[in-house]
Length: 64
Image (cartoon, rainbow, N blue to C red; front, top):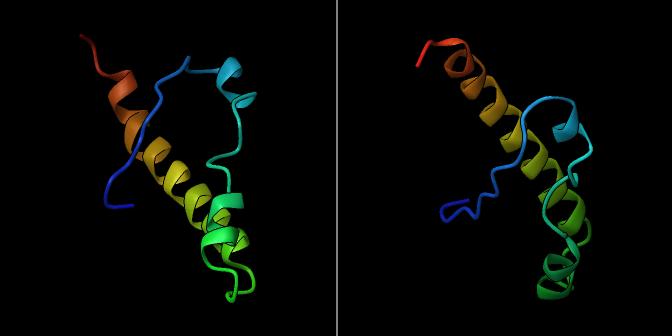
């Protein structure tokens, strides 16, 4: 995740309906001999999104 493509969307309940993360299919095609490449990417992407949310939460509470 050196280069990250970020889409900023609405915060709150609408954000919960956002897609779960990047499409892992290209990774499976890129690494055909690596079983679980798509699953691994999905797990890493999920954790990165969780960590980003943890870091952003305090910033949302600060007055502008």
